[in-house]
Amino acid sequence: MPLADFYRLVKPKISTHQNNDLPTEFLYLKGGDLTEELRQVKCQYTIFSITDFFSEPYFETKKIVHLFS
Image 1 (cartoon, rainbow, N blue to C red):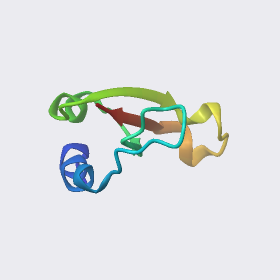
Image 2 (image 1 turned 90 degrees about the horizontal axis):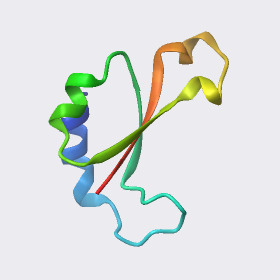
Image 3 (image 1 turned 135 degrees about the vertical axis):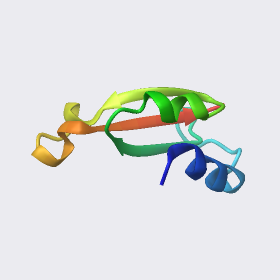
Image 4 (image 1 turned 180 degrees about the vertical axis):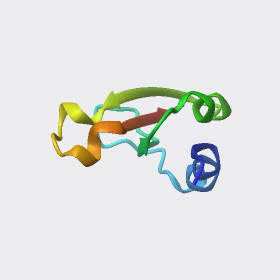
């Protein structure tokens, strides 16, 4: 599912109460080139390389996208 579509579906269900250090709206596992998809999402984000945490070949092209307001 495109990231912008997923964000629109999930955003209304996210609690405003935070239980952690990240201002988390949500974390999204996504592969490939994220440039165009991130342009369509109207919020702040940080991208983490998942290969910092997992070494399996499946994760070589994956990223963790942290979206927040």
